Length: 296
Ligand SMILES: [Zn+2]
Image (cartoon, rainbow, N blue to C red; front, top):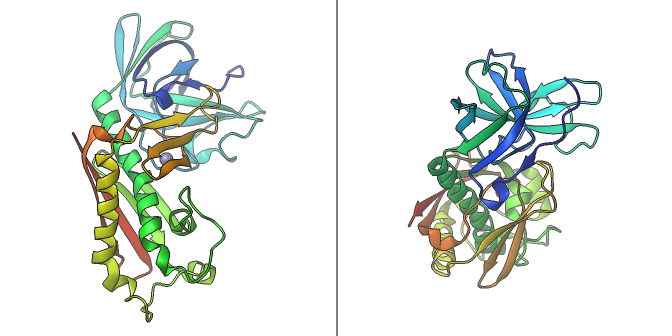
């Protein structure tokens, strides 16, 4: 395989269709086939931070529609190596590597290299994933604000609204699906050292007992933001898959920005409701937020 250029992507602007020449077809270790195009609207699973699942859809060449059953990130290394997803040994964006969107087909598409492909993403699935992803970022900001009094000292990192950034300091994992975003936060020793208090103090009850009030405060904030129909956009410094994109939301309190490689709503009025449910893991070591958007 000759060196392939990093794939150009149109999903940050919300595109779900496109046309682009096929640059290569690569057989995968599991018997499936990866089709690489010059540009694509498909959002692949990221290999470094796999929070938003892959787009699905179809890739049509010469009138034959091939179902795209998965979409992964591929890395084409300086020594000609071709690796997929978690097997890629370097972080996303390493300039020595080319970064490819892999449209995964279950069967060999045949001689399609060099032919134009029509790319079509399952728009319903995309819309659900975008809603869950926007919900994830809003939850982060609302939770940071509601949980802020539990910091004994400034942990040295704050969010767009000046709250200590509990979301990024405690984040263990963030996973979206078509129903919800599930964000898991670690309440361990290192968070306590940074100044976070999960125990009861004179000012507030233990986190476990404070969860109903905390949930209510977060949900009131999310409802207010949805009601304000705040616009959302992705700032795109370049067309490459690896460009450092940023999510921006013009909330009533000001503009919020979060680094993000995913897809999003265009404005919060696309939702009828956004609610989270906060729980603690059985041993109390993790706080789990399940945030469900309901589309308008
Ligand atoms: Zn994101």
